[in-house]
Image 1 (tube, rainbow, N blue to C red):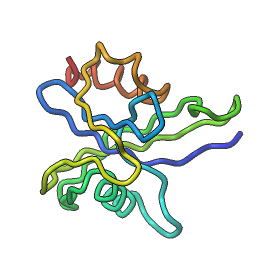
Image 2 (cartoon, rainbow, N blue to C red):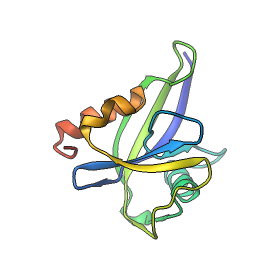
Image 3 (cartoon, rainbow, N blue to C red):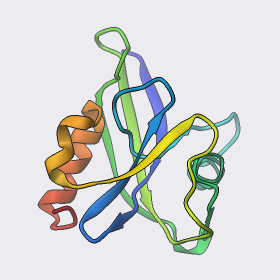
Image 4 (cartoon, helix red, strand yellow):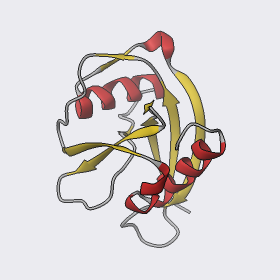
Length: 132
């Protein structure tokens, strides 16, 4: 079974999670992406979030949230996406950049707007009392 390995950034404010919508896409995704060859999780997180959101992750504050798997959006059946999620503090102002068209703060009631793996993450965060 094929697995797409991704790193994701969990940013929650006032019970809502930061989500992004890429150009030409309908669904929202938790920001992040695939690692470049030789990168570890922290390096991938820092690079991807700077590329997509133009903010700098504070490496010292990175905290593991969890790893989640589901059917990958737009992929053939049986192709899974594995999202390893982290929280961290950042400096700078959030701005949609690169392939990102829109930033949006989503609550649990917006779960139908996100990918299958993000739905699992939303449910986990809701159970922990982090999403409203």
